[in-house]
Amino acid sequence: MSGETAAVIRGRVYGTVQLRHTERGTPAARFTVMQVPREYDRARGQWRDVEPVPVICTVTGPLARHVAECLTDAVHVIATGNLALRDNVLYLDSAQVGVDLSHHVAYVDDTLPAVLAGRAPAPAPRASPAPAHRAGPARPAPAARPAPVAAAAPETDWWRSAPRPSWDAVTAPSRTRR
Image 1 (cartoon, one colour):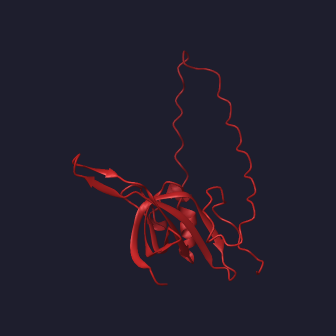
Image 2 (tube, helix red, strand yellow):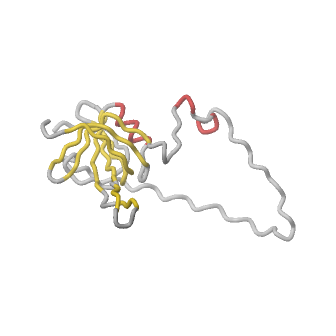
Image 3 (cartoon, one colour):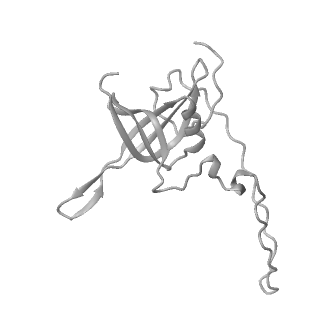
């Protein structure tokens, strides 16, 4: 497409990742990255943040599944791809997306600790008897979480619609043809 240029975007995920499937069953995900540019203020002699720039990123194929599974609101990411300006909105057709390791720790399947991967039981917490003068009534169990509310039907052309942070992160592929 004309007017596109290769770019690297670095920022935080804003809202939820939306995962859909094309008519052929190919997964496609969309999410917003808020990039906060910095500029040097010569008068004060220091760097300052300027107005955040939202960039709508799209990915397809297996990468879309990985993005939907791994990314949540406020995660720092680095994304590369073709950047385009359409209707005063920046769009990045992403080729690669990764967690920014300067802000987060990430595990690859092979390096995931056994306890987190479910291959080994978690160590039992040490039970130390409370002193008699500190013993009190037992705490009640936390209340159960309410069941999730069913999502409304998606708009016909969700690629052009504004991202909604309330949409489910993952939805089943559509079986109807339009």
